[in-house]
Image 1 (cartoon, rainbow, N blue to C red):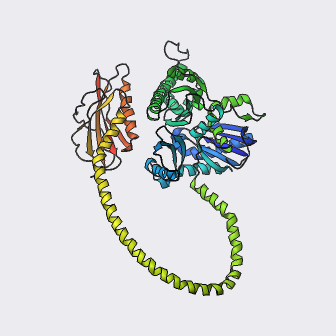
Image 2 (image 1 turned 90 degrees about the vertical axis):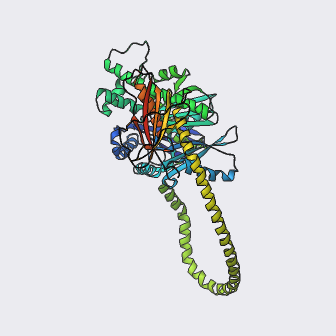
Image 3 (image 1 turned 180 degrees about the vertical axis):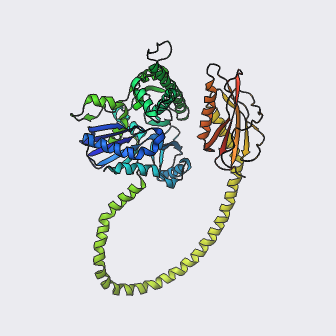
Length: 583
């Protein structure tokens, strides 16, 4: 719980900035006293203007509603934060922090000294394992955001993660509902998916959201991004599909079909996440869906997901259990409720304990806080400096005598310590010899398991793509000849996948290193030929998420043929290994 009874919550989204002022009544009731929001109006192709635009927008938001500056909690988007759910073996409570630090070093894809990270213990599963969620963000990103917030006169006291703030708002307003609740927060750049089930929580960020719709509209109508955004908001809705009659306005009909296509892609990703949550996290299928986020209010979005999931769908109301200042317009508040969940979650950090309490405070701010906390002690030290010279003069005479007596004792101890030091150095040399042998054995084990781990990782990722399998995998040295194709065992249809004839790469490798040339086949979709390439692109994206491959050097070098009458299509990819195989 924070110290002040008044707090500002600032949610910095991809396309909007929201701010709200809260007060805590009687230590347990949160009251909304003021709020404001604005769109950044930023084209994704001009992200270099984001910093100055954010500062100007935030300053105007405070000025328009007369919101007083003060202690502030702000959130960073889920897309900017690396989030990983891990399970730890049962250990003593004293060792939990040490093991979590080790897990963070293993899981965070950046050097640990370059990130700001935190963790939250979720609970213990049926097997007795500790369930922990890790959060990490690059230090330069959080420092830049904090400079923007503080440049308008706000005092940062805590930095939260937007999806976790939304989860806290849900729990405060809805409690522990029976069964699994899936929160679908459809924003501008990403869709944050949250599963809430009793004491279980799982989240995932999907790269399909409002900007994907806008970009497709801009491409279809050959207009600028901001113009396409305006068109989407003016006439857009999710096409009902099936036997429903199209609108008479052809522009509206085209826009609605584009929106439905993107929503269909989003539904496919959500369905995969639901399956992952059930199979890998031991969760239950969603009993209900709560919609949130700026894109969720496109007309018929709730109807679309109701038809897809066949469960009740409604909009999350983050103000359900809050007290509202009388001067605030309920009608205006109702218009923004769908994307103010994160802001309410930030205000809740002013109350007692929240289900998820994460703080990604910048290092510079921690150092500044540390200095401020030490100021009273520094003042006392300065006073002591004035008194010490007088005390030293009287003390020196007595100390000189005692010092001589102890010097003899110290010399005796020094001789004993010298003998002990020599014994320790001998033991240390023996230990280093044992460690050297151990390191060599570890290298030998790694050589035996490296390729098995790579092939197993690729196999698991291709099984996530329907109607797709691998026929051969060949290691390639950049600038050298391709090695013989490696058969991958049984394919997804239950037959041995035969090696294929190497096809000439359309592009040379981007950089030196070892590549895997992956070739495969898939079932051609007669009704939707474009699906062939989409499946291959999904597989390529899966490889980019692999810890074994460089995500910036995974290419489709042999795309499926655009037109074919065969039932089976062939494809080829090339992916550079992050590290050289052990030799």
